[in-house]
Image 1 (cartoon, rainbow, N blue to C red):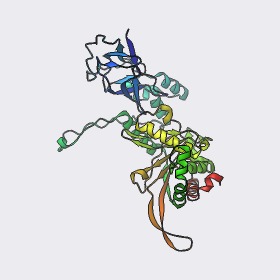
Image 2: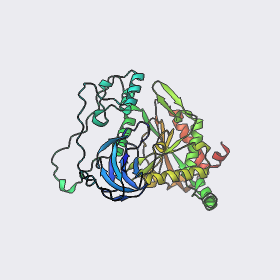
Image 3: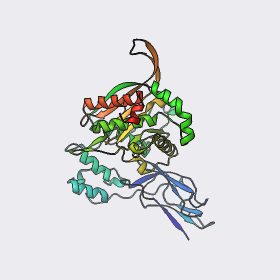
Image 4: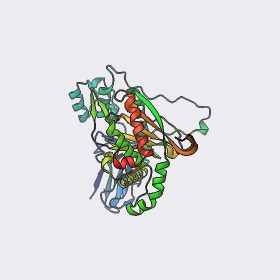
Length: 399
């Protein structure tokens, strides 16, 4: 008996994926729940496992092919079953492209139709980015957020032609994830009135506290006491004092969020991802540290789910782990604020008594959307974070 392997549901608003690679060739034996194929969406990488033990008898879509949810990927037959001659290996040529619809109107995904109807948007004026030019939910949302009479999205630049040192260059097609990262970063620059304010924080008190309790903390909680839990807790305290930094713009409305789902930027070999730590205000220091460690591991292993990557209210990015001394982080839309941490470096500081001492200092940066956050709020937010880090007891006493 043959079992079809199909593209699983990939999450809200994700209707298609690209086949990154097959782990098995046609004719190979497979075990139940063994990874068969890796799919890459614009948000996450997903492994599709074999639904049963047997033999991979057919590969219906080769690596590099774009497939929709529910499309046939391959077929699992009984052990030793005959294989389909037309698909001898993953490297088989991709299926011929479908003929574009003959009708003048573009094909529109069902979810996109509903949003377009509710928003009064004419889908015939939208250049679809989905398979075969289909108009997706994301296309309609982008059109709704754009200014009136937007210009069509520019096409990707054509190759530049012969290159003088081509033999010393490597050309690699951008992955869906990388293209999405590029698009979101550019969208943030194009739509938000983005501004960055800076401050510096003396890490002495935090270093002393961590050195005093880190061994006991790890022994009791089974996780290391790092700096991120303090910055997450300090950010939550500041967000409660300055709620505009935890808000977003939705059309003509300002949405103030009374929950604190903190996104933490994580670098992976595939690109930057920003998984979300849910309910950070309700977590203990150990809960924050363990939650961040778990998300970081999932990111590096390519195991993040759609739920892990959506719904954050504020982002923290730590460029200091790579040696960055100062930067201006870009907003993680639709959020209105992002905190940038940087490298801790000994610097001479003038103390209250006039003496000069070397202190472990870190530059902090807050990039914010000036459409919703005023300068006073942004600066005060950053000062609140600084106060909590320089005097960590404030966090525990909620002062």
